[in-house]
Amino acid sequence: MKKTMSIKQDRPGQTKSSAAITKPRGVKPLPEAAQEPAAQVNEHYANSEVSRVTFEYFDASAKEVLIGGSFNHWQPSTTPMTQQRGGKWSAELLLKPDHYEYRFVVDGEWKDDPMACGYSPNPFNGLNSVREVKSSGSHSSGQPQRS
Image (cartoon, rainbow, N blue to C red):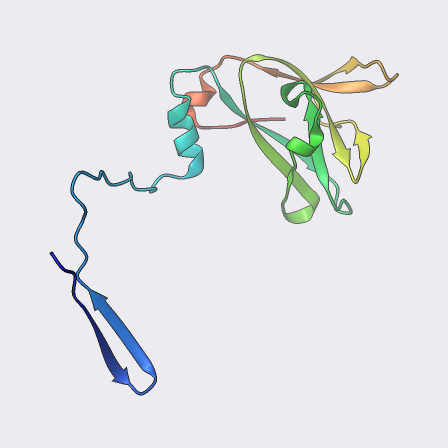
């Protein structure tokens, strides 16, 4: 079967093409991407105990804010935060119920989370911020846990 194509010219210098395209046999269409990425992630983790956890930091003069912790093997470059309005920075992570320690890296300098629920001493004579992620069913509701 041949495909036919015609080119129409409505105005000088403007062309439109119309082609009769048929769907190949035996090829399944991809599912429509109507869902938001977060909904697709929730669907992927539907049977696991994973919660969406939001970390927030406030610094209107910051150029870059990263977060490093036990959840990303203390590699802050893997978890950049997104700048919001009014000096707010945020990152949303998928975490299993556990005890996590973390710190922010603001323009290259490690910083405490002033809004942390707790702190734990670290080997550098400082404190790590602590976040407890509990198995509360919040992963199924889609509501993130906030600091």
